Image (cartoon, rainbow, N blue to C red):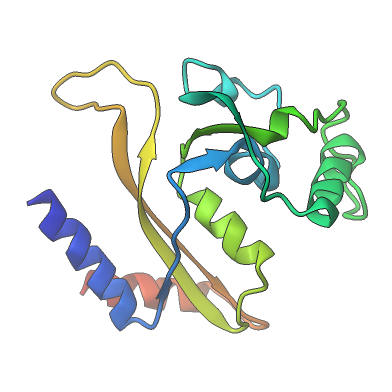
Length: 166
């Protein structure tokens, strides 16, 4: 039944013109957290909340993008923000883990230069440490999406949500 539900979600989003995103199950800290501007001292990065891969290091992080993300974490870069004001650890960003959220797929899509206007979604498997019981497992599927355009407003969001739920 769960697989049927996930397939239904996928088919509804495709019918609305969304393009499916994908990404690796084993991901770097960079794509899973740093590119989303989650500070490296955030509690969600604790070993008890993510499954880190021992002795593995990312090699697919573009240097130019890494420098921009580092600058935003440390001082806000050229965004107008003051950033998180800490020393960004370049070696830590290369650590590998089992993907904790589908937003890593969104970060990769946005960095790749998506078609504008465009609608993108992911229904993807994620992993987080959890005590196994009747309602919790260490792996789950997460759904997310985004719309990118020069002109967006709340009416479009409400219309998409209504069309999805019909």
